[in-house]
Amino acid sequence: MDDERSICIIEKSANSIRIHIRGFPLPLINAIRRASYTDVPVMAIDLVEIFENNTVLYDEIIAHRLALIPLASENALEKYKRPEECANARLGDPDCYVTLRLEVETSPTEERMVYSGDMETSDPDVKPVYDNMPIVLMAPDQRLRLQAYARLGYGKEHAKWMPVSVAAHKYVPVLEFNADEMGNECIKCIETGYPDIAEKIKTMQRGRIKILSDVNTSGLYWCVAKRCEKGAKLTYSDKEFILKIESTGALSPETILLEAIDAVARKAENLLAQIRELRRGQS
Image (cartoon, rainbow, N blue to C red; front, top):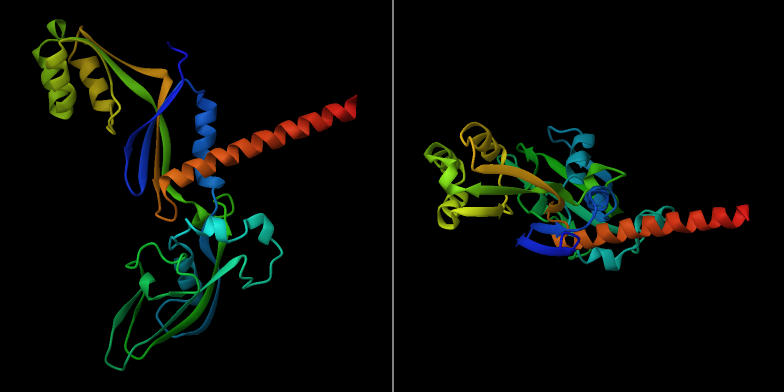
């Protein structure tokens, strides 16, 4: 049935997930995509106290670099209060903040790169996702000593609180074909850029293929339009979508997706509550 609703995971890895969605409206899927950027809380460094710094970089530059280091936040969602609850919290409040320290000194003959892994955290569950992110290159006889405070925040406040590097959706491409009518030039063109699809065409001979693999189909569209006079047609289903989420590593893609769905649901419930309140006021 065309109205059938289904959600299926096509591909999943540690930091990315691709989902085939059928029967749900585009505005809802787009709302979840946008919420992945703006309404899913993650930990990020919000304030830095620099006690000593005679490196080549200004204090502000180091603070900016620290803020953009992704911090593991999977357990932080359960352990720390949400941003709205910490609006008036004092700095260092253990219910809202994690403290990270960095203290590095080079000898008169030493040069070294300071990495994210050199930071010490007050909570082992909230630490840099990657240990090899460079902060500053220190020359001989230099010192860097600072203390940073991380808290949960939303991407709508600042990009450092965005848990995703990619959140995108697209219509599902559908290729309808009849190999007997496509011609050799057509199949050769498809085979050049899309060998898996060409193999299916040769095996099936005729029918339709939903392209769920993570490929750019602009080349396939060109082949169909320029090399396949007849026998092939590429369309894009407006009832089926592929949603792709790539995490920065701060949260798993599954957690990002569920948190984004919850955020959209809360906004909808809040809107309905306000509408009901307005109606009561008018009656």
